[in-house]
Image 1 (cartoon, rainbow, N blue to C red):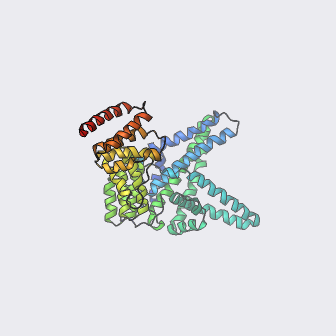
Image 2 (tube, helix red, strand yellow):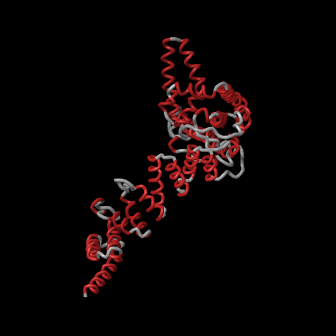
Image 3 (cartoon, rainbow, N blue to C red):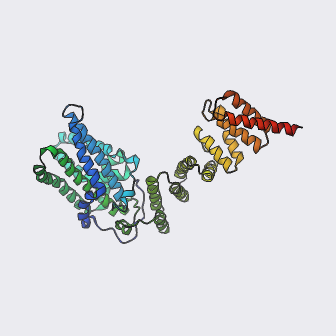
Length: 435
């Protein structure tokens, strides 16, 4: 989720996180999350099957489990911070942003860098080192929230951003730290109870499950705090609180949610909703088109063009003739036309022909063999060019020359037989016209 200036959502106000503590403990036990936790906990059993010596097998298995778990946890934080605080109605349809897969590594990098800096301070002064440790520990929730919001390692290394988050949240930040500390201490207590009951054979999986359970609660809680204070943190929220708390009910349609934001003058929030819809259904042309139009309306020309290119490629791949040709025209306004990949040219020319834009179709394929020598589409481009020249522009001589060159160069091509028949008909027609 990108940081953006946000207009506060309308009332009712968001329920404070301390009034929703029971829901935080139940969240990991919901079916969608429970399956993930169980699978990850069982993943620790890889320790016993990896063909590497101990303790490397343990380190590799645990690293795989926890990197995957942290990716899931950051995804939960992202969803929750946007207002998607229920699973059945909202989070089940929210796909994680692929650009966020490196967040666990960025988190580890932050801890390593500051661990080195704090150790250097400790060598100079034990008192200063103790103070630095305390500050970093108290700032950890702010660090993780800022990293999730920005997905930027550089800004997340800056203590100034941590302090800005802590100041924006205010006194409740202390309550958040207290609850997170209690969760950290709760994991060992739970383990002390469970492990004697379960036995050593599955102790490692039990250990991981309990730690993963408390870890997910903490990330969910931090995500909720980001949602609760999204306005003062400058973060966009895509779901109003009354929508967010309507669990297991039909979600408002994306169009309705966008319309509500636009009516309230919340263009940035409307764009975020449209982006989430695109992430959830990347092959959905109406969703991509909706985002494209919103970006144009918002005056974000560069982003609109990039989105238009993605939409064009999708329309071309799905053979949406009118949309693809129209977008090509729109995106080619100015000195330079839209730059096409070689494999896009023939399909677009065929769609332009279907839309009866014969001039565009011929412009697209003109000189294709010289621009892309050896390309597999050259025979088909020759054939389409000949058809267009003969049928639409009455340039039969040129069409005949192209077909003869095609048959000479590509006699074994799948189109050779059809092109040969077409050439014969063309010659007869030209002979008849010459009489």
